Image (cartoon, rainbow, N blue to C red; front, side, top):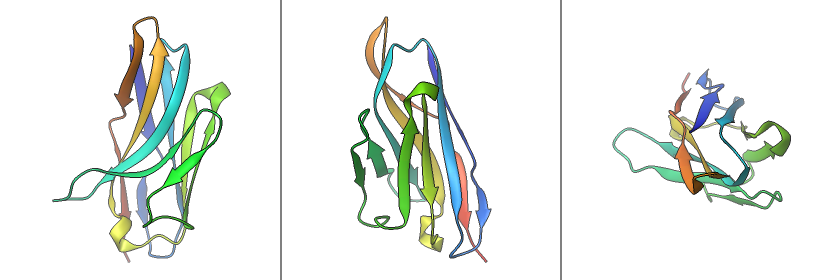
Amino acid sequence: QVQLVESGGGLVQPGGSLRVSCAASGSIFSIYTMGWYRQAPGKQRELVASIGRGGSTNYADSVKGRFTISRDNGKNTEYLQMNSLKPEDTAVYYCNADVKNAAGLRNYWGQGTQVTVSS
């Protein structure tokens, strides 16, 4: 079994910064694409950013230039650095990963961490 655990969410003022992390643990041979999604109240879950094992990245237009995704393959951990935060960034942020283990290649989700941008 594989667990993804997010940390680092919280309350921040508009214009502020926050970094969320996601650590994967359990039966892991290799982790391929990792990503961050978010879901605001009353809205669908949306992709924020993703990163390949080699470091290639992809961002939603709404966060380009403000958010940076990164990963540490040795620690099975990904990060999302969020700068110049706006109230519309308020959401539950979920990490996601494609993990290969003895059971094969499967997609996993974390439990989510709340990010609130408000004065």
